[in-house]
Each structure stands twice: as C-alpha cells, then as structure tokens.
Image (cartoon, rainbow, N blue to C red):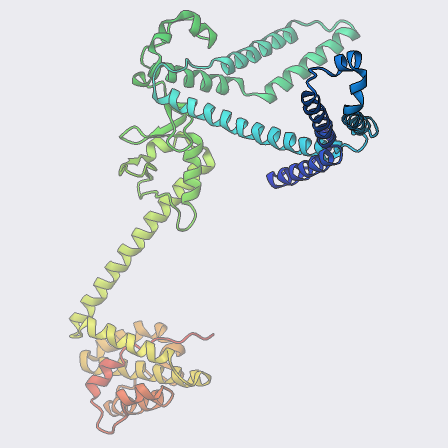
Length: 493
C-alpha cells in the first residue's frame, strides 16, 4: 500500500495492528528460509574432520593427501560427511528464492500507516504549538517591553492600497476620452477604483491601524516615536507626539478592545472608553425587558466595567450614537419620566382621598381593608351566572348610602336641591340602579335597604364569607353602611 493511498485518517491503534501483522509475517518468512541449521551441520562436519586428523598427527588434510595418500582412507568417512554437509548448505541457499514469498505487502502497509499517522499527528501538534507560541508572543509583547518591535507589515499594505487608490483616482481625473480605446481604458480604471473603495475603507482602517501601532510604541518602545524612518513606514512624516494617551488622541474600547479616536465614543469619569458601535448596541439592548444595560432617568448609562460605579452621561452618548439609537435613548428616558409622574400622581390622589375620608369621619385604612375584602369575596363568588343580581345589590347599596348622606349632612332644602341637580347626570343606572329616585330620602327606605341588600348579596357568596358576616335581623346599620360604602363595579364582560 502506498502512503498516498491511505486517504482516511489513521489512528494509533491501526498503526499498532499493522505493525504486529508485519512482524508476524517477517518471523514466519525468516523461519521458512532459515539456513542456520545447514550451516551448523557443515561446521560440525568440519570440526569432526579436524579432530580426526589431529588423532593421526597430521596438521592439514592437503599435506596428508599429498605425502601420505595411504592414510586418506582413514578419514574418508569424515571427508564424505563434510562434502554432504556443504552440498546440503548449498542446496538450502540456492534451491529457493527467499524474496518470492517475502512479506513485502504487510511491511509496506505497516510503514505507510506509521508514516501517515505520525506525519499528520506531528504536523497538527506543531501547527497548534506554533499558533500557541504566536498568541503567547503577542500577549507578551503587550505586557513586557522590548521583546518584539511593532509589526508594520499590515500598515504598509494599507498604505500601499491607499496610494494605489490615489493613483487610480488621479488617472481617472486626468484621462481623456477622445477615442474608443481611451473610453474603454477609462471604464476599466473606474471599475478598478470602485472595487478598491468597496474592498477597504481606507480612512478609518488606516487611522485605526496607525493609532494601534503608535499606542503600542508609546507603551513599550518609546524610542520608535523619535525614529523618523520607522514613522515613515506607518505614514507619519513629522515626529509623532511623545504621549498620545495624555493628549487624548485615541483610547481602547472596554467592550470590543479595539482602538478608536476619542471622538468616536464616550467615557465615564474614570476614563473607561466605549466606542460608538458598542454604545449603540448597549442602547438597543436597554430597550428590551430585563436588559443587562441600565439607562438612568437623565439618559446616562452605567459603565460596563464591573468594578466601576460611575456613569456615562447622556450628553456624551447623544452626539455619538446614530439617530435611531438616539431616539431609543429618548424613549427610555420618556418611560422613566412617565413612570415617575404616574407614581407621583397616584400618591397625590391617594392623599387627597384620605383627606376627604378623614373629613367625613372615616378611617382610610379601614375603608381600604373593607374594599379589598369585598373585592376578594366578589372574585371568589361561586355563582358567576347570577352576576346581574350582584350588580343590582351593589347599585341598591350605593343608592341607599347616598340617601343617608343627603338626610344626615344636607339639611337645607335649597342646598339639597342644588346638590341633587349637580349629581343627577352622574347617577347613571349602572351606578345606582334603574329605579333610583334621588328625591326619595325616607329613613325607613334606608333601613329596609340596608337589611335587604346584604341578604341579596351574601346568598351568592361562598360559605366562608357567609360565616364571617351572617345575615341577622338586628343589623348594625352604621357598621353595614361603612362596610358596604364603596362596592366595586363589576365588568359587563
């Protein structure tokens, strides 16, 4: 298997499996073609021949064969064994081609798997390590002076594109359109210029990149601010100010951590700067319920820095954010004012009502408790189908209370007639009933109504309320009138 054939990623377990298969195939192949046994047999035969000739007192076999041929017969057996052993070893070495069944495929597969696995693994780990080293170097450059000078390559590229745009723009302005060829050339130049302007916003990008480099140089490499050659690489001909932050040229946004000119954002009193885009996003977020951004009644916004308790004033936010976000800010302030005004009006109205109730000898707290009790009991009625009966009972109670007030507090007939005329348009049937006659002020009618009205009303209430306020013959009219003074009007729905 070729290395390039293994397209799918290889795991370490697959590498181990392929290596084990290759090792087993190699061991079996070596066992099949092993010549050690034949070689050992030849060595044993030669050793036996040497021992035999030593017994005969002959040092070498060749001298014995030449000088003492008659003694050769004594070692003939050993010579034949040596010959047979050498022939067997020769046959073992030449009879079979060991490469014919060599485990080449298994070995190649194991090597390919190992190479593929370690190549990809090492490459990925090295790539991650390089990225980590680059990030760590960048972080160290921001905190430790003198490690690496600021990289101006991006600044040079932006400047190059800016110069190219200027050149194309100048060529478009100076070009002549006398013939077709010039017109085609002019069209191409205009198209190239439009493409350049669409690809990059050179002014803001160039300013932001230059500001970032100057801020880094100011913080860690102040000597570069005096180096005219380095300043020219970022497009500054004259010497740069020695301290940009003290002059208020730029600042870092506490949300997006980018560098912006100070006129493109706002800061709190501690100098925590927020850029225009982040301010707009914060204002839009404040329009939603349960927003994490808090806009106060005067239009100021709480600083987003966790430990900062200061605010960014509304006067600083207004000129920075777009028109739509400014309208959102005004809407938030308007809601604050409306909510505070409504609460103040409600408080003043409650105070006036309490004063009127005290003027007539009624405790406001007791009245509110009675009203809440009646409202709760009406909401807990068991017979909602008889709502019209409950409405009639309340209307009768209101009418009888009005009659009682007229009899007890307005004794003068002329004044009573004037009050009746003023109240007549307000006393509609849904308030005092269909059969109400304001001129009837008989005390007997009041007593009979106060006895009958609670009986009508309580027969539709739950048992618990009936037990708390049972209907009796000896009704305390003063307590009943005070208790049932202001019954709630039930909705027609």
